[in-house]
Each structure stands twice: as structure tokens, then as C-alpha cells.
Length: 103
Image (cartoon, rainbow, N blue to C red; front, side):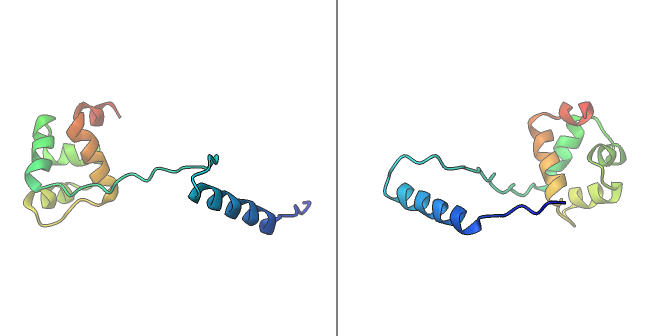
């Protein structure tokens, strides 16, 4: 496998020039990455409302979210909170409950 020479210093100099130009208000073509805002916590009653809107039992709802039935039960009782991935799915389901059924 052939080694490829990486010109890190040159790339760094170009990047720093772009930053300085940007700070001066000059038009620079920079890559922009949008970072989504953190998900807000969901109250136990909200989680239950989503589940009820799907006419799903706790085990069925857990299956749709790919979590255990005990997890759903503890969320609805306020004992535990959903983690990031489950919280994202719940946020999607809150806006469009049928999205869980289609996935």
C-alpha cells in the first residue's frame, strides 16, 4: 500500500486564513454543520399519551421503540427517563404517531 503524503501544515494555514477572513466579514466559502438542539425531556403523561394514541399496550409500544416493556412502564410511572435514542423516537412519534407503525 502506497503512503500518501499529508500536508497538514499547509491545510492548517489555509484554514486559519479562512477564519481570519470570515471574522473580518469577508465572503468565505466555509463548511457549516448544524447541530440539532438537545431533545427536551418528556413527561410520563406525554409518553402515555403517545402510546394511547397508537392504541398500543405497553409491551407492543416497547416493541415499536425496540426497548423492554419494563422500560416503558418505568417511563410512564416516572421512575426512569428515556435515553437519547428512545427520546428521539418518542419525539418523532409525538409529531406523527403512525411513523412508528410504518418503520
